[in-house]
Length: 136
Image 1: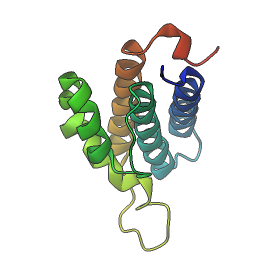
Image 2: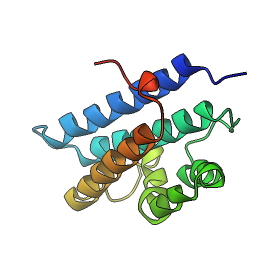
Image 3: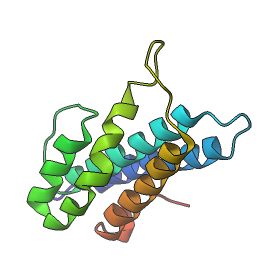
């Protein structure tokens, strides 16, 4: 059975929405770095899930970037380049969303999260058919 291209597109659309949200948050006044980092993490997570759905790989409902990347690497070893960059974003999925989270992310961390999200999104989009890309 061919992959559900509409579902793949939905995952990519949600990833792109999070990427856009991170961009807006970075330009915000006041700048809330944890929002940039959260949306960057979410963009990466959803892009990876789009790739997995396209390849009909089942995955646990998780925010763990490392786990999702392991599954992607099994399909395309080129995903390994993102392990060092993207796995640390996992902590932004929940850690900074609640009180007593510790020190908030720095501006540098926010920039790194956003740049990583941009790279992963584009990397995934380049590996999927145009028909699965978000509609403009």
